[in-house]
Image (cartoon, rainbow, N blue to C red):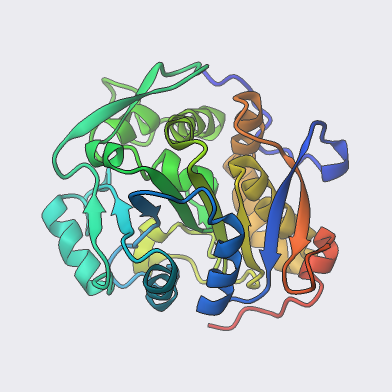
Length: 328
């Protein structure tokens, strides 16, 4: 049973309490913009580096452009491996063999891609969890020294939104055991029966295990572009994008970066934000943020730093004041 039932309620910034973290912001949606903002959070990324991103279902239209990721790896992290896990649903990424074929189709051929659960699973401890003492992950995750969480921020059919928390909370859990622990009550036929607040809480506990494992050698980037209400797991069936592109965020704090991303959506004019806000609230997705705070994963207050304008502090309204209607 869920610990709370308020995941449909948005808490305005001024009503939050606690310390502030730093979140960097650029409007530059390009490989240059990604490189520029990565430099602000690159310090913890050392040793053998994993980059966790959603490589998409076959021909997925909204994933982070491959050319951006290629430039980042080539210029800044040449030995890095992209990491993924197999999916919990049947489709283009259900088995390792299918997954490898989809990676080729989608153009992820310029760097090693490590399917973390290809050779089995491992357990990571969940500190302070309500549902879990440990979570099952792809065993290869333990082979890395640091983790860059490179996230396409968008909606999600179950989570309301998919930010850094979803990227690793679901994305590092292996495709058979770990994802089942988050999505499914054992012994009943609906594999997606866990929803609303309980789903957000379980996903966040899984995410915490990965954050704690890598800390302090973990950084987060959210790319706010092509933000369908649908996750990249829906591939070509994703709902058309109606939300404007916003920019790229980076932080060393997972809660701060996901909070800022959600806040930027809520700061948009109503006609621009309506679809994504409805998706977040109808799925009670905002419980991700409040539960991450309860778990001590970071701060939901932050200073937004505009790296396009001399590192000036910037308000949410100013950050989105020049957005344009989305064009495919």
